[in-house]
Image (cartoon, rainbow, N blue to C red; front, side, top):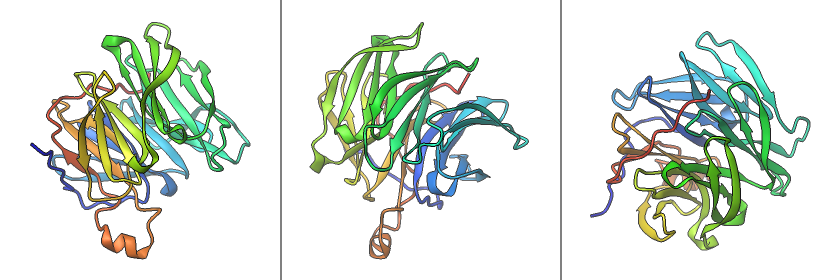
Length: 288
């Protein structure tokens, strides 16, 4: 039976990215990259609050006590509920071609985040930041760092450098937070779309957004395509499981690349979409 997608909320982002379910507050965090905004959406009431920060903002992750940890430009910062900002780390400072993109935490609350090259050169990296401030580069030579997720049962880490047109999988050591044995998991044909944000379900299925082609794909642990969810927009960006039972799949989207005609034809571009994918997701911790 086809999965039904809804656009329940009136909000529209220029470049909505990085959805993150904050289980403590039962809200969905996401960013609007070019506007420098962090949105917190209550999916039950539809109420949304906005934290205005700086642009470009790559990710926002809950940090407990109403705080969020954000990646802005080249700076990782913690923003308290009072709006006070503390810089935690700086990466690739002074390199105008690079900025932060997606970020996500493993089950121990270690933050993995990557950079994006505006000129699409393999000049960026993937980094790991611990709660006590230890920063390490995990991978060099990254062009467009995007989706990531962990399969803890199988000790695997999935990662997307979009410009490679594939999802890679690594062996993952959860105790040390180390990745090894990088290998292709799924190759994505260019005509299928650009692989972007990603999430994992309780059965080990990997859900990845197809930017430019308006769909979300699910790949089983064996790498076989098992589900295609069409969307009424060209540019979905990322996915996250949320809700009290983690059975709602949230998909963010963008309209920053659309011209006036395309915006008219795609009135839902920039919306947050929801659906019941028929399987629960896995919880994604906050930072620290």
